[in-house]
Structure formats: C-alpha cells, structure tokens
Length: 199
Image (cartoon, helix red, strand yellow):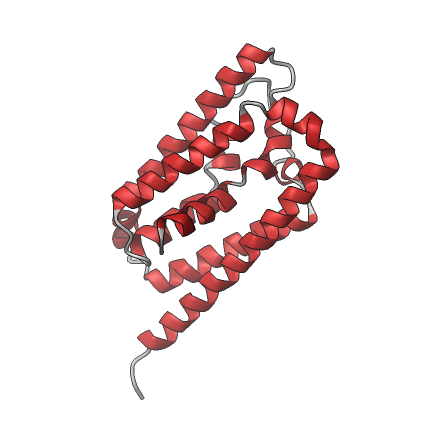
C-alpha cells in the first residue's frame, strides 16, 4: 500500500467528520479555550493508544496465536458494521450514552477516535500488509493533523455545514469505508483458502 492509501484508510476509520457532532455535543458546555484544550488532550491520548497498538499489535497476535487471515476477516467485519452505522445512523447514536462534561479518555479518545476499527486497521497494516513502522507512524501523524483541522474549529464547522451537511459527509465516508471493509474480508477469505492443506 502507498502512503496516501494508508492515510485515507486511517482517516476513514478514525472518521473526524462523523465524530464531530459527537465531540461537539460532549464538550458543549466548555468555553472556547477549554474546548480547544480538551480536543488536543483527547487527540493526544487517542494517538498514544493507537501508537501502542501499531508498535505492539504484532506481538499481541503472536502471543494469542491469531492468524493474519482471521484478523483480516474479523477486522473487515468490524469495519463493515461500523460503516453501516455511519451510513444509516450518526456518530452521536453510535456512542449514545450520557457522559459528564469534559471527560478524559472515554468516550472521545476511546472508543470514538481510537476505536476497534482504527486499532484493527493498524494491526492489519503492520501484520498482514507488512508495512514498516515508520510509514504507519507517519500516516498516523498526518491523519491526526487533519483531525485537528476538523475538531479544533469544530463548532464553527458544525454551524456552517449544519446537521444535514455533516450527515452527508459521514454517510459518504461510511460508503468508502464499506468498500474498504469488503476488500479486507475478501482478502482474508482468499488467504484462508490458500492456507488450506492440499487435498
């Protein structure tokens, strides 16, 4: 995979536009300065979590004796289900529980940003695709820089685009993620068939 493809995949699974209404709603009572601090803090925590799985994900798989084809299939299924929620629901409904104002780590950093889909995608990139750690880390940094450009002016962006505009963006990204998920599942099935012993 090329760097641009990795960035696109991670941007889709982290889904800043889809998570924006949720982030704005959770941090609604904060003033502008506190909102910016909270966004930067949660993005930093999410980045640390994803870096951990990018570095140690392969070791975890080896310890649990998980085959890469099973990870590809299960990861594709997770991404597929997330994409369906993005298409037919909203980020606020996916994480619909009530939380106190200005929460730390949960629910914005995890599971909204560093969720199962992002973690799975990182492990697949490192193990199945055999991508070098430096390339994955660079892609993560680019994606989180782009996420900052979405979340920091999030309140103004929400006001400009409106609920319908944000909803349309989220559904479009959900459709793209759906296509990526199907591709992952099919590659996993292919690798499983190839791994079967010859008759």
